[in-house]
Amino acid sequence: MEKKSSLVVILVVVIAFLSLTVTIMSVLIFASPSSNDIGSNVKQSMSIPGDDSLKTKRLYSDDVILNLASLDDRKLSVIKLNIDLIYFKDIKKIDEKLEAYDGRIKEAVATYFQKLTIEDVRKPETKEMAKKDLIDELNKILNENEKMEKQVIYSISFPQWFYQ
Image (cartoon, rainbow, N blue to C red; front, side, top):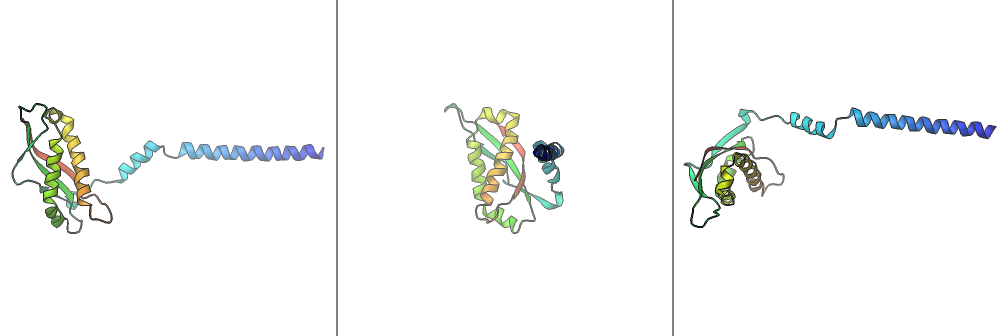
């Protein structure tokens, strides 16, 4: 009889422990934010910088004409554009750095557009894709000699975008 009662006590303790564990796990799973919520919370906490922390630099003094990739060797396709770099002005010596890397930045822009065809630049989404790709590429260039990588270029705008 004593064995039976001790066995019942052990079973009750195990069942109580398992019930408590399941309850705690379900609270953690259902009460905590989902992975989608976590991403949106991060986006909400990342505030858009104010105008007082950003500065704009026109990359070219005049509009520039760049060659596009050609599908037909008999036809030359070009894009006429200008670019405004919107960057964080509080970074130490950023104006000097942008001036020092001016040639590399312009080369990266020209190389980027040499890979696009006239059909590519006709698509409205290409402009947005170009902004994102160039922001990534220019930040990579500007961070080459840095110990800690930081976002230098915040955004890019194309005040001129004409293709032919």
